[in-house]
Length: 119
Image 1 (cartoon, rainbow, N blue to C red):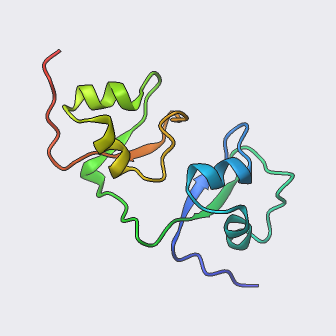
Image 2 (cartoon, one colour):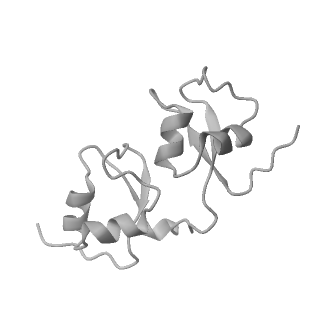
């Protein structure tokens, strides 16, 4: 059976990942993830395995020059302060991101012009 993977992004499973948690994190449904991964067993996911996550079509991924990779200790509040933004601006740029559950290695979007505040 052939699955249309347009409108999906590849995701490497991490310890503790479940379809339910991923559906919440990426603003999709368990059913949509299952449809994109019919060969995967919902109850037997393997760390490191690649699955495909459907993303909303009206969300445009940010260009590489506007991406930021989450590091240990990052919070939306700290990043907003570092880049001279409001937390609300970061939330608006990243509608599918749970700011209370940032993962190291997760990619978020920043505005085109980053204004770093002196430290």
